[in-house]
Every structure is written in C-alpha cells, then in structure tokens.
Length: 93
Image (tube, rainbow, N blue to C red; front, side, top):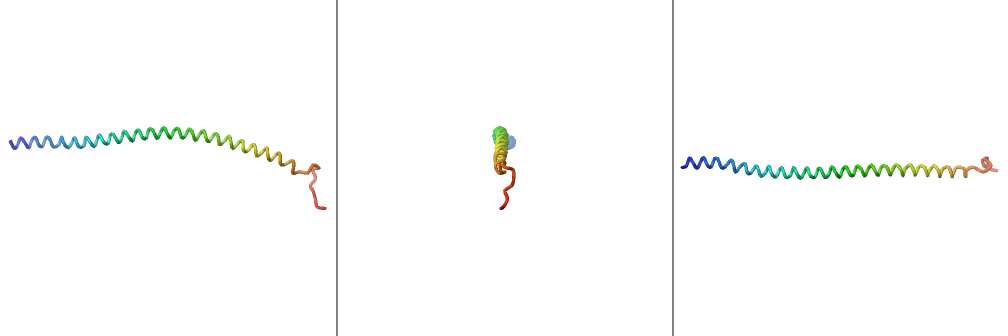
C-alpha cells in the first residue's frame, strides 16, 4: 500500500507542477497579447501622426513661399522710392 501511495504521489506532483507553469504560461500569453495590442495601437497612432506632420510640413512650405513672395513685393515697392526722382544722388552743398 505504501508503494502504491508513493506511485500516486509521484504521478500527481508533476501534474501539479505543470498546472503552476501553465498558469505562468497563460499569464505570459495574456501579457504578450496585451503588448501586441498596445504596439498595434501605437503603430496606428504613429502612422496618423506622420500623416499630420506631412500635412503640416506642406502648410509650412506654402506659408514660407507666401512670406518670401510678400518680402519680394515689399522690397520692390520700397526700392524705387529710395532713389530720387531725377536719378541723381543728393550731395552736400
């Protein structure tokens, strides 16, 4: 009878050990799935942010061109008025 109890004990103990590691395995799977979902959502957010950055860079380029055009117009309108009407430089008398 003692031998039979030893056999049962030796058979049941590894099964209990497996269930413990199975819990750890399930916990690891849950964590891996959570991490995968988090990484997927971060990838989607990253893609959306890259698109927004591209859009803003386009707007910035358009605004910079408009600014440069306005500077050119202002410089052209200021330059002729700085030269005297006769075209001669004013000198000291």
